[in-house]
Image 1 (tube, one colour):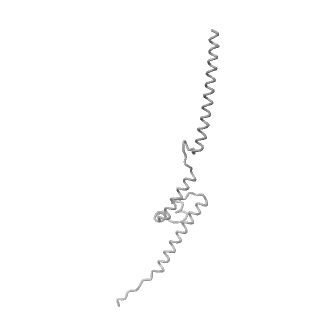
Image 2 (cartoon, rainbow, N blue to C red):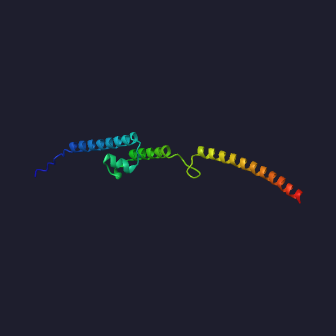
Length: 129
């Protein structure tokens, strides 16, 4: 050997790796767009399946991870409004309470009327004795 070292030509390998990474990134972006267009849930499982990448790929890339988490959170808020009182929204809860208040007043009035009628009836019975 003459002591000469060969310079390695890795530029083609690096270029190919960069293209593959860009292609995978595009696949993930397209998958998220498709899921949003079709009003399907966006989460790590659905994106990984749709983009044909692993979940580890998504979790290990902070920009993708943050975007998926943000989309998932926004969908959770828009698809399932915050529920209270046996699965009712705040607006329906208020309507229900108003209806119950109205019914309570009606029943209290009826109860008062029946008490008056009972007094009159008991008075008549007493007079007959």
